[in-house]
Image (cartoon, rainbow, N blue to C red):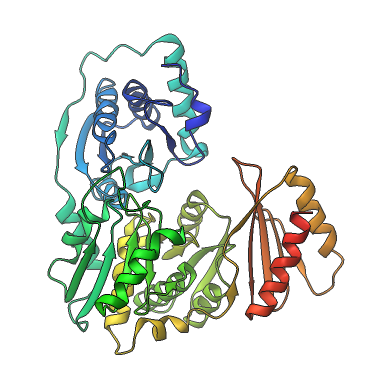
Length: 454
């Protein structure tokens, strides 16, 4: 096929519509290129429940095997289960998933041995270049001694490993509603929760990559509505929603109210610092609530602020030896999980924290939810650079504010801040604002939006 790889090879992964933008033949070239770039003798490959995933995954595996690489196929898995396999087996890995994207999409998340990320600057650009060359010139001939393809079950080992990191055996019994969104949480949750003092109420656990009930993207409030209704209806202690590949988790309290990912980041950070003797670095991106660095310092840790994006979080975790990292998008990263993100481990921490005391979740997380936030607001603009310059001009002469350019433009004062970041792929500016109270946040948010949209 005449594929345009610039449209499907993104900053952190491969993502596109099947078969319009990519197909099994191209997946095979990606497998061969992955083998060449990693130089590995063996790799591990897994896939989600999308209709196109098994064939794409197998084509990738055969492409790698044609370059002499032994391939371990772990079949159906969540993305963090693939990261577990990469870490535990110390092999580069490839996960076939398009995460929360609609059914016609698919993609590849790749990592080096030990779940180290592969992004544009760490091998993905080279993989694209090789695949483009082979598309133009023809695929390379298989090596004289091709690699082998073998299968391996990792689900139970993955579940046991997660349970070894968070002790839930002595918590009070909890009733938890889990919305898997017909994604991979329906595959992993029963094994991870097995034997724990939990009454599980499953929602949409049937693996179905056409997503018949709602999109598997809990970041969109519309996709949490069913869970929000079900939790109080069941008299449950909390609800948990996973995205399509189950590497992110979202939490609602006993009333069905969403808990902000920043509050979950702060809660888990406090627990991880306690596990590490009250010391350690915790990573947070620059649009995470100010609550997070405050809680980290209160618990003896050192907060480190990064740009938005998992490649920046993972790089900073490796550089600093951080014990934990969290993002506003509900990605949670753990040193004990090869610095990779796992929503399931974050969910276990929430369950352990709730079950280790007698109060409801709403009371527990209140201490980690100290400010009023706007959420992310997107605005279509004709000229991103000009609008950012206009915001800078409006605030740069004010003595009570500071400006920084770590990621877009952040304007901060004693009791409020906002950040404006340009989208890399669309003519958008993304605004996040936070303040000590709702009235101040609304005022600051509206001031910034007026400039952005003028």
